[in-house]
Length: 72
Image: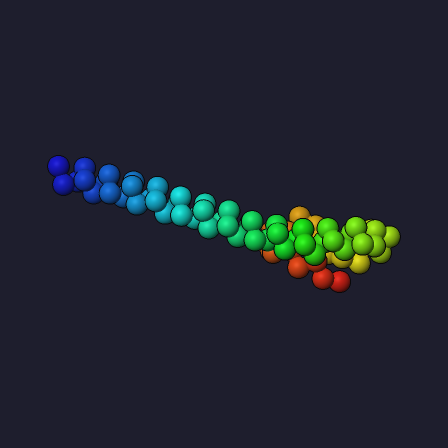
């Protein structure tokens, strides 16, 4: 009977850890997305010609790492 409780405990802890990791990932993505929108989208609408020449690092990879939107 003790083994069953141990297995159930491990499964429950595993589920809780996964849920907390997912929540943290979502929060990080939301913050990154907000930064990306602020920097990249504002710059793109302010000066589309300069933006589309590729002076700004506003792509999926940059969005994942937090979207700085700084000049290369």
